Image (tube, protein in one colour):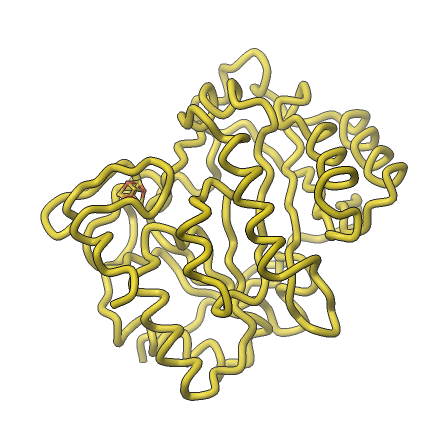
Length: 293
Ligand code: SF4
């Protein structure tokens, strides 16, 4: 197994817990086997990810980040999910292909990579046809990302903060922007900007947080001036102050229309392409896939 040694001494993500996952778990809370919370055809992702039929979204349990406002708290931080074996994972990916999912959308995959890489290696040899989406917070190590070259078609990469002190305060990681910046350059090196005709490339997601805690203005400038202005950007407005965030003086509220419009304006002024949300956009519900039958 290519990344199997990390199951004995895990350094898959920048936390570098170095734990033996056969007997314990590290910060992410993931043990030895892959753990999945849900598998759905998800119509709420960006158009190139969801297409007409929905993204074949596999929501993995556990996460190296500990965002206090995480809308997926149940499975990202509280361990909800089902441990499965490699054969089940391969079967799930095949079912999504059979269901005509638009892509295989791996959500928070990092702690599960040894199994994912093994599954994809075996499926790609059999002509697996779905573009593989690596849906990530961007809190990733460059050396681990290099191991994914050729396996991942689309990197759907967040920029959560451009000021690491907010990363520490709200996601309990000390070095978010330094790490994410390098990771994004590596993802870009592998696949370039997203292009529809290739169904391949990098897309950057920015969740706008109140009071510019997300540092979205700096993030947009980074994309335009340091990365590549042709990388599509998904500017998201749906932040809600869940859990601990409710009491926070900076992020204890939704973003205002003015904050979001200012972010859109800046995105357009910088000549960036991509998607932003309007009042007319409906949230489309996901359909569960009977993947273990
Ligand atoms: S994947 Fe989990 S166990 Fe491994 S280094 Fe990251 S947080 Fe620690």
